[in-house]
Length: 382
Image (cartoon, rainbow, N blue to C red; front, side, top):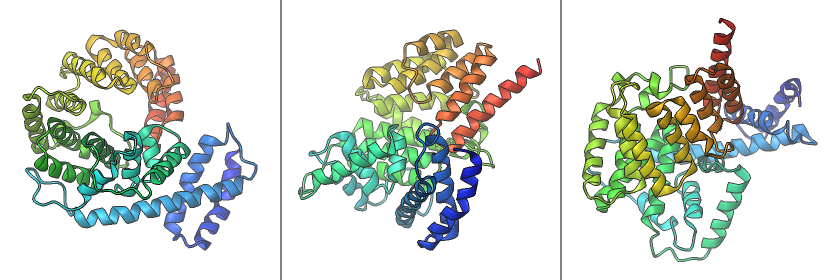
């Protein structure tokens, strides 16, 4: 399907959405989302009716955005400002809803998906991206979860590990762009830390605060991503960092290590370093080893390969990466970075371009595309 075809269909699809009741700005955003999806899907699976496909996809995106916006407004009524340090002052019903949706009749993954959709206000597409699965797969998972709990009495709260997972996913979605979501996740986690004396609750709160401290430096004024190594560390929120480190140290002292404490320890080492070069990468690798032991997650091992590349050199990082499945999300981006550090600019540029095609969002795609263009330009100037 050609770019010209997409351009020619855009006005017609936009007009259909407006006639269906969408305001123009929201319809325009939805159509743009549908066009991006078309560029991704159509080369491998071209539709028989391109216009009908675009209308269906754009309308679905409009409905998702409308629901998300309504949920966001409800959250903003509860969160008027950035989360203040210290114990939560009051408790509302939201946290209780998280526990009730984490019902024992559901698998943990289904409970998380249902809670994110029903209480967190995330769209099916956002949840699918968080879980690295197709949107259709996540839609089926949520539907099955709804059927499972249909008619079930919600008189016994679910398990805390599932609630922590939901809170972290809500925070991550907010950390990626919607600040109110991140602030709401921190607010609820503060409430939970006040109500429950649990080292992993403390670990999660510390992790959120340490990540949230960098929020102002993660994107440039034009919305483009700023990698950790290029962020202005002088703009990091030192108050949040200090609070996060204090909470983490108290949790680690209890000697009941969990994955959120391990992740917070890695974040604290990054926050403590004046520059990327002065980061204690050896200790970060050790924490990734602990995290891999706790989670057996291939994504953790992927991040560990980056840390190994910093601690022991890019070839050591590439050796660690070689043991992982190259179909892992962001595998190509990590390989590109390590090859660039090893001086193989041609391979790095090719891998950056490949990673850009697989990127889960436009900001990341643009960043990776710029990296590929930068290296190609550097090679031509040699």
